[in-house]
Structure formats: structure tokens, C-alpha cells
Length: 68
Image (tube, rainbow, N blue to C red):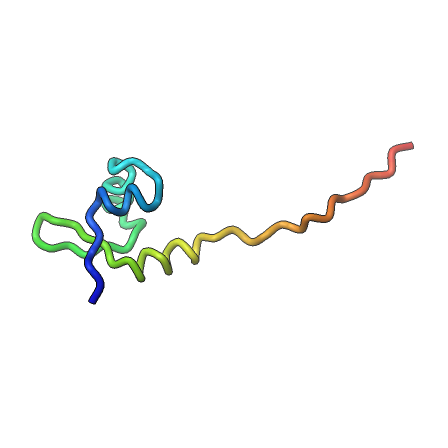
């Protein structure tokens, strides 16, 4: 089993503040493992969570407008 991530580990990986991670945990927005008062994160679960939130790619083709 991979090592579980701490709040600081996850904040650094996602490039957000630890406070944001705590807020997401409080809101139930992010998958979390609670060990008593501690919170930890499974790397695979977080990666799947991030992938589900990935925005669909936009077409690089620009719409042409006919201006008359």
C-alpha cells in the first residue's frame, strides 16, 4: 500500500493552501480517510477525483464570424 498523504503533502501536490484542503474535507468535497482526529488521503483516490473534474477540451478551431 502506498504511503497516505497528509494535508500538507496534498496541498503541495495540488498547489493549493492547506486551508483549502481542510475546507474541502469539511464540505465533503474531497475523498478523505479519517484516523481519529487525523485526516489522510489515498493518492489513487485523489488522482481519480481530480480526473473526474477535468474539463473537456475545447476545440482549437475558432469560430469565424461574418461581419458585414
